[in-house]
Length: 231
DNA sequence: TGCCAGGCCGGGT
DNA sequence: ACCCGGCATGGC
Image (tube, rainbow, N blue to C red; front, side):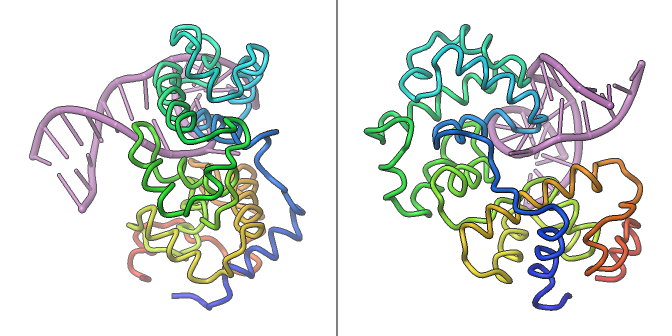
């Protein structure tokens, strides 16, 4: 389907194009987890406004999220959209964290647990799916999981590096099978995908003009029928 | 103005 | 096992 080093080749091109992203804007592991919920299907600029509200209300710890009145929490996270759902999801996640962690901001107890255990626990919580769980695992707890998001799937799909009907787990397996298990690489590579997506691979853009990935992958093939036939 | 953004859930086939 | 509607705000 592709050369074994395609993914690393893409990474090198993106790294050269955008530089190290040293990504996920947050000051603490708990703030990462908050952001992972708030950014679900939502522009990061809106998430920033919600986090600023939470910060002003001193709600950037699990204990404070657990304690705050639900209606008040809804008001704080409103700019992030889906505010009723997200307020509930923040409560559920914070209750789980508060029960597991002595330090409800740095989450050191979680860092000592195995990746698979935490992932299963997170996925059992209502409102946490694979991407949110993996974002927490990678960016808050520094566990080696590759985060697959809409940009990643779209970019790889348009370049024919994954099958059109690939699901989240399929894509994750495909990527990690061709990369060294390296937390820093996983962090930066995912950030590069997002940067590339924002600039060149939006949902309804008919063609990725000047897409840097085309240097190693060739021109993107956006015709679904042709793509189907070629696989 | 409508479309999109760093998803996930629940109910129906 | 898929497919789909609902969830919601703010920026271009």
